[in-house]
Amino acid sequence: MPKTRICRLPEVVKMTGLSRSAIYALIAEGRFPAQINLGPRTVGWAEREINEWIEMRIAESRDAQTRDSSNARTAGR
Image (cartoon, rainbow, N blue to C red; front, side, top):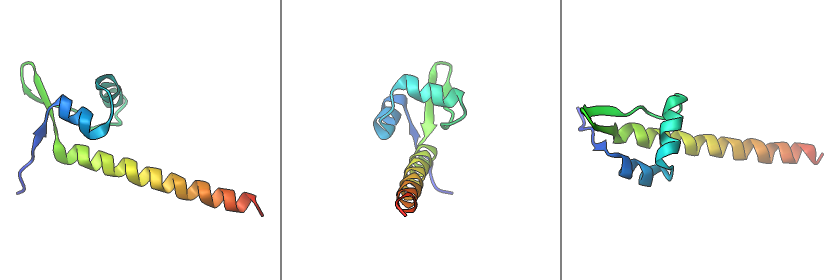
């Protein structure tokens, strides 16, 4: 079983480019991986889950760009 690395909030902010409040808002909306309780006042995130979320954002962005350029070509006919 591969080791799972736990990232603390400052690292998650750096990895995603999102602010602390944006991360927690996305968690509340169910659109970002939830934090893992590590102790009474300590949380972290599974690095693998954050990387998967980032890859999904990239794929969605690429799909949207492809659709937009397809629609632009179709509209020009």
